[in-house]
Image 1: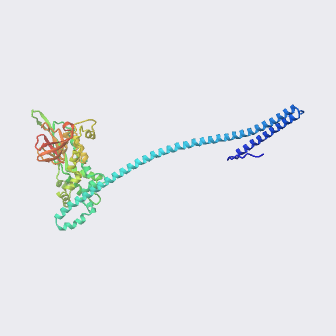
Image 2: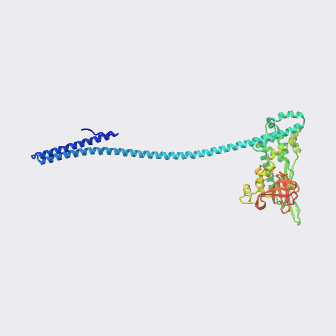
Image 3: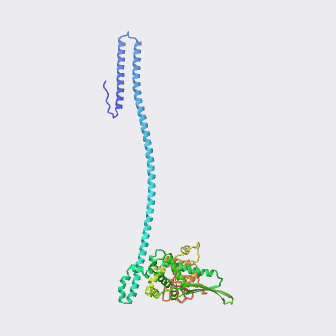
Length: 476
C-alpha cells in the first residue's frame, strides 16, 4: 500500500499519519470484502445468513480493534507531548520567576549603588570644598606674610638709608628672609607665622584679664559711684621688652607657644598693677556717699629694664624696635591688618537692619535687649578686633570702663577718627546710655552708624562735634 507523504518537520507526526492511512486502507479492503460476500449471498442462496453475520461481526471487530489501537497510540503520544509541554511551561514559569527575582535584585542593587554614589559624591564635594577653603586660607596667610615682609623691609630701608650709604649695602643681607626671621625683627611676623596663638590672640586674653580683675574689685566693694584712672603701659613697650629679654638661640619669640605666652604675660603684669581705694564724699544733698577709685598704674620701660637687669646693648635693641618708622608694623602686630575703614564698611553693610536679632542672638541673648552696644561688639568681632580694640559689651557703661581701663578713652571735645566708638549721654546727666561707630568727620560734623537707633533700626546719624549729648570716645 502506497504511503501518503506529508511535509512536516516532525518524523513522529509523519509516522502517525502513515499508520492511520494503513488502517483506513484495511478498512476499505474489509468493506470490499463485505461487498463481495454480499454479492456472493445474492448469487448463492445456499450461503446462510448466519455465516454472513458472523463474518460481518468479525470484520467489524477487527476494524474497531484496529482503530482503537491506532487511536490509543495517537492519544498516548499526544498525552505524552502534552505532559512534556506542561513541563516545559512549568520550567518556563520558573525561569520567568527567577528572571523576575534577578531583575528585582538588580534594581535594588542599582538603587543602593546610586545611593552610595550620591553619598560618595557628597563626601567628595565636602572634601573638595574643605580643600579649597584650606587653599584659600593658605593663600591669605601667605599674602599676609609677604605684605608684612614688604612693609618691614620698607621700614628698615628708610631707617638704614637715613643712616648713610654704608647701610644700603647692609640691606642686601637684612632683606633675606632667613635673616629677618632669625633676628628680633621676626616678632613683627608673629601673627602670620606662629603655629599656636597669634599676638592679637594673646593681647585679647590679657585685655580680658584686666577687665575681669576690674569687675571683681567692683563686685566685692559697696559703692555709690566709681572712677577709673588708667595709665597702662602700651603694648609696643611690653612686646619689645619681652622680645629682647627672651630672644636667644634656644627660643624664638615670634612662636607664641605656651611658654612664650607665659613670658609675655609676666612682662605685662610686672609693668602694670591694679589697685583700688574707697573714698567718702558729700553729695549735693549733703548725704555721705562712697566713691570707688580704681587705679591702673604702670612702670616705664626704663624702670622695668633696670629691674630685669638689661645690659646697655639690650636697652639699645629695645629702643631700636620702638622707633616711629616701625609704627605700621606695630599696628599690624597688635591690632591685626584690619583698618578703621574696614570697621566702618562692615558697619555700613548693616544699615537698614530692624530689630537687631542678628546681633543680640549672636551675643547670647534669647530675646530682644537694647542692642546698640551688642551691635558695636558684633562689628568688632566681624573685623577681628573684639577685645583687642573694641570690647564685647552689652551695657554702655561697661564699654566706657573698658576703654578707660585700657588707656584709650577721650573726653567730650576730642575730634574722633574714622572707626572710633562714640558714646552718648541723652539726658546730659553724666551717665552714658547709647553708643555707635564714627563713620567720618567733615566740617566739624560727626557722621555715625548706630544700632538700636530710630525705629529700632540700624541707621546713619550726624552730630556737631561740640554737641552736649556726646559723652566721650573709645579710640581705635
